[in-house]
Every structure is written in structure tokens, then in C-alpha cells.
Length: 621
Image 1: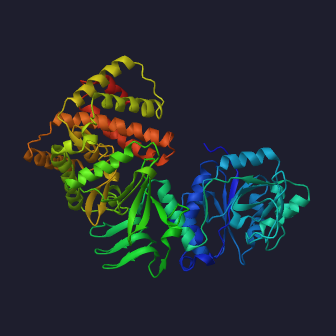
Image 2: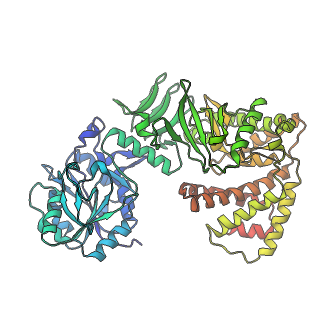
């Protein structure tokens, strides 16, 4: 049940002039962000904490707004307030006075995104006696709200423009467009066109408290220009751990080249032979055959060019651009080198994988394993520069609907890489002593199950196992069995995020954790990958293909090793999702947990007679 019952009012009447030509076609509140209009995102967040009614003012493209309301899940809670002319942020509230008066209410501009804590905001307002509690943050570009020493509003510079007065020295902060008001605020709002700041200052002079509640550090984005709109979309992708979003209505992506951050909204058309890089396709757009679209917003009848550094980069250093969404603490940047782009890897001074990454790259390259070329290494600075393989992983490549034959063909190429590692590279591992001495043995398998118990079973699920001794014995036997199979070089994290699709060819990354272990561990990682579920028949054919290729090298793969490694791998993966989400704060890994559990239940069902305690634990997750 929602915690509150206060109402919300969303100013949504504006013309969106700075967003033209996009807003020639739709009002700002209906701009899509990964399939959802901005206004829907705000209302979903509000509805999670309040069951109150919803007020929305209308003016620009009012018919489109009304149509959206009539088809939305919130329609029974919404009351509309048409305006002609536009009444301003204060006049809009006064126009809805009969709807809003009588209790406290929340105001949230319909064209902003934030992760502001509504519960903290509302509770602070209700307990403070404020007539208005404004969500503010320190944003020098917009800091025009003047505060006294107690954090209460005493003035606003250039009201209605969010433009500071640089000549005035005072404690100043920026208003975000979110506030909670007490009904007394209506006494200070004129019955005419006005700005809400009029009421703030009048109420403050009358002795009421107008508090600026500081949310500096919270995410906030004003969707004011095409560049800020695109940046907000990229932020949303990154928050979800993604680089590609394709609306389910979009047909397959066969023979469409993609790279970078790609967003394709509903009813868009991807034509065979088209190419996109860092491109946002609005509803109904078409990527034409033979055309390359880069750093742009594409619509049915216009295209807006963008600067990649403004939209994509999260680095303060303009010479390098942060890339990647992995669980690693290492940082990767795209840089310019010798007239081409390259990838700079920066490691912490105590990162033991740095030297391994360099040595493994040299060794694997020697035997034609498709890893990025090493261009430069600076051991003293813990930096290395690699060939740029782009941003499209196998995981992202699979985001767009493709023909099963195309998917299976790509996976066969990926398995060819595995075969080369497990045979050709393995036969020459003595040339890389650093790798030869790293064995994935009994102790490592036991570590994986301990990790699973600590970080997932206890850390995520909060389960305390009663039969700990019996379960420990099963883990002991499982590790012994997994350790008994023939070993080869294994990537050890051979999954779709770590395979880049570069010019249509799979290439390998993140291999610095490679060890000598059972080859089936890599096969379990890629064919039973929680990041992407393969169709059962296709998985069987791919497993048969891999087994046949290994047999050609006189390296048969015992079926039992695949089952044991599936168990181990999926427990390790669930432990990692728990650790990365809870300890590293990468909450997007939580979305992979249901698939990880589903796969682990399939695994354990195959060996329930040998591992009954583990079976009982897993089936209860």
C-alpha cells in the first residue's frame, strides 16, 4: 500500500520551444524515454508512494495529452486543467485551487527526471510546518534561489528564468521543479498569470517558512534541449546497465550495423544495410538502407546532430570518454591515438590483474585468439591502451530481434573461439607461465559455493541454512567432482557481455581472469547464460557442434562435466549479482537474478538424488 494519499500536480502546458523541432510533433511530457513518456515515469514514481489524485494542466498539443491520459493506467485518477493562455507556474496552481486545496500536495514538472526521495521530501514537509518545501540542489548554472542562514528562501533572482545574478554574493541554490505545498499557499497566489516564486516570496515576507531542502547529489535532468534529452536517455541506459534499447514493436535487425548507444522507439523501421552509432530513433523513424546515422536524434522527417562528448561522456577530461557497464572496478576510456580511437584501461595501483591482462593478451594473440591488439602498456602508471572494438557486445547485439539462423551462426563463431582457447592455446600454455600456474581447482570451486551462500543465499535471500553440515558435505563432493575433469585454458567468464561484435565478428575481452580448468565451465557460461536465454533446441545443437569440434582435437567433453560446471557457474553468478548489487551499488545486476535462479533449478533437478540438500535449498529460492 502507498504510504501517503496526497495529490500531485504536473505542470505540462509549456511549448517546449528549446526542444524544437522535436516538440513540433509532440509535447515535452510525452517525449519517450526507453519506451515510456516522461510524464508516465514521474507518475509511476509518485504512485509507488501515494494513492492521491493527479492534476495536469494543458495547453500546447492538448489533444495529444488528452489522448495519452485516456489510454493511461492513471486515467481514473487524473483531472485535467486546460489553460488559454498559459497561466505560468503560479497561475496554473491557482487555476487548480479547488482541486488542490484542503490538504498538502506535491508539484512535479512533467518534463524532468530525478531520483529524488519523495518519502523524505513529504515527511520533511509534513513535520516542518513549512508552507512550501522546495527540492533544491547546488547547480551553479541555475543557482538563483537566495537563502538565509537557516536554509529558508528570502529572494529569487530573475524569477521565471532560473538565471543567477553573478554580481550578488549570497547563499544561493537551484530549484528543481519539485515541491510540496501546504494549502495556505493559495493565499499568496494572484488570480492571473504568475510565477510560483511570487507566492514563495510573499509567504516568506508574511512570516511563513519556505524551506529549500537540499538534494545535491541526487540525479536530476531538465529535458530542455535535444542534447539534454539525449543525455537523459543515455543516463537511463547506463542506470540499467545497458547500451542498447529496442522497442518490442521493432522488427528484426538482420544485416543492420550497430555500435555505441542505440535507442529505437516504437514502430521504427531498421532497414537492411543501414548503420547506426550513438543514435536515438524516435517513434516511426526509418533507418534507410545504405545510410549511416551517427550521434543524432532521428525522427520521421528530421534529424538532429549531436556532439558525442556532450551526450555520452561522463568524464571531466574531454580527451577521454568513459565506456563500459561491467562489474569491474577497472575503468575504460575511449581516446584518440594516432588518428584513430583506442581504449585506455586504468587499473588501481594494487590491481593484480593488470600484468596478467598484458601477458595474456600477448600470448592469446600469438595463437590467433581474437582479442584486442595491445597498443601500449605503462606498468608504472597501471595503464594500457588497446584496439577499440566498439561498444556492441553479443549481449547488446541480441537485444534486437534476429532470425534464429543468424543467432545460431553467431554462436558457432563464438564457440570456435572457445575451441581455439581450449585446444591450440592450451597446447602452448607453457609459453605463458603466469597463466600456466593459475589452476581452477578444488579450492576455487569451494570458494564459488561459499560466495553463493554468503552473497546470495544469505545476503540477498536472507536464508539461514539449518542443515549446514550436510550441505557443506555436498559442496565438498561437488567441488571434488568438478576438479576431477580434464583441464584446459578457460576464460572463466565466457558470457555475452564479454564478447564484442566488431564488424560482424565476435572478439573476446575481459580474459585476465583466465585459469586452467574444465572447458565445460566456459560452455556452461555461454550456452546457459543468465544474460540471454537460448532456445533449447538451438542450445543442444550448439553443444553438439562444440563437442564435435573438440573431438576433432581429441579433447572429448564428458557430459557430466557440463552438468557439474553448470551448477558451479550459476551459483557463482548469483553470488556475483548479490555482491555487485549490494556492495558495489550496481543495482542493475538484480534484474538477472530470476533467470539465474531458473537456470540453477534446471541444473540441480538433474542431480537431485546425489545432492538432495542442495536440491532442497535451490528449489526453495
